[in-house]
Image (tube, rainbow, N blue to C red; front, top):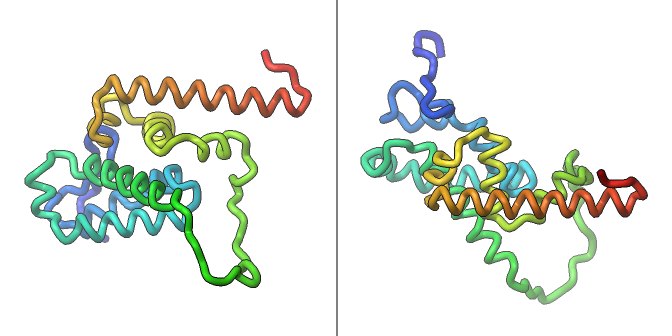
Length: 183
């Protein structure tokens, strides 16, 4: 990495100096994409799968993406949100198996699994979750979120409002169940 100029930023997002090099773009953007994927999917393993799937598709047509959009990071985020929503819809359907599995394989617990906010965030519909994550976790503006998700700024505002109301209701409900008074 010695001798390379530091990555530039555009709209708060890290963008490599030479956008034509997909490898450099991925290297500079990967940490943020993994964080965004983790917030969308709820765990780091599904996040890595989501990022890899989207980057494989986009990498094979990188030149076309650069011609099509002036912000490839927003394009990739929108692709991730769409891929996650599609995967979520497929998983909602019943999966029938011939035999019941004998035992479950041991998996390491997610450290945020029992955090009330994280649980409430996971229960949001995918579009609302994406808006909340991009706004409060990635720090994007409403216009940047709208561009990332391919929706209007008004949709971003309404989805954020609904998501915050839902989160407040779920978190206040948890406090009341634990015997704490809600102010």
